[in-house]
Image 1 (cartoon, rainbow, N blue to C red):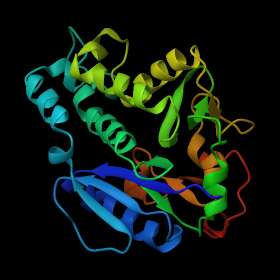
Image 2: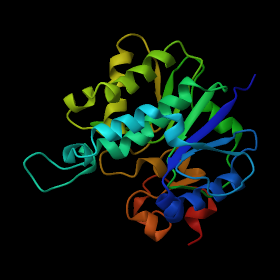
Image 3: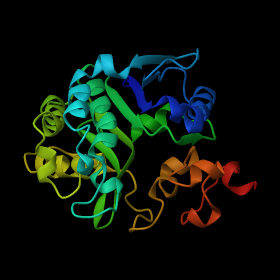
Length: 263
């Protein structure tokens, strides 16, 4: 029997204008109609079939409190200690939005699986339901895009909400922020924190899947589009948002989709 699935994401009002609208429109065009999309947002941006808009601050009051505690903490906004340099590595406040959305959705899900999908993703080809469900084996808790010698790419992560590991994993994630203990880590963004939690819970028997296993995923490679996901989606990381697509030089693994071959 097929498992039920929900996709979740978040973006700000500014993000809607930059990439969110394109994300939603291509999602509605190419994703299966039986996989609904939930968007954690500031304000509702439009009416689309199969899309539910969730007011972020109402759903995640702990996020509001975290941001209020650290509104004047420049280090929590990415500023390196004793330096004028800023980096995403320490931008705890920015990435807290994503972390709280994931944990809220996973702890309140009515479907068997939830999928976090970054809102700067363009779906360029029809996505088979069977492909999406196959990414996470029945007895595994999560599936992610692994990379060598570094934390995973977390633009796409699947979670099994029916797993015995779900509640404790997600509560541990929330506790990092609610207790401010994430600042004891080396980096504060969601991918690094996710990886620390995965390693901790793997030690107690939690099983995980590396979606990019067997594909180029060394440091520096655009792992999302070089994984099996690239047949259906493009991840517009960084400056690619302005360009509207990834570069030809980003591809290390042959793609069959017309999107990659008709330029």
